[in-house]
Image (tube, one colour):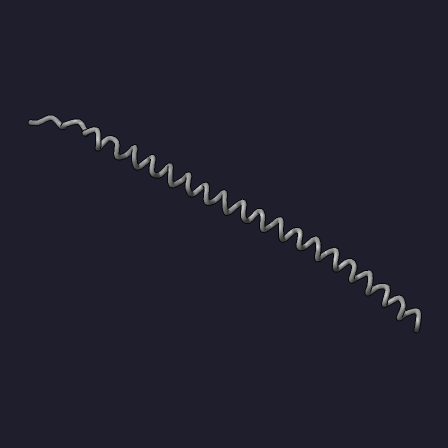
Length: 76
């Protein structure tokens, strides 16, 4: 009977190459995830700024409406 031959060097490297490829793919994925997270964070900040501006405009409008209501009530 023949003894099993040890794996060749190229066969042994294949799993390592696959591991390296998987690690590279995970790194790329993480980089994409980080990019998307940054973009989402920027969008959230922009939305918060818009919400703050809108809130201030609404406060000004509310004060203006209150003044007009007081004027109308005084006239009655």
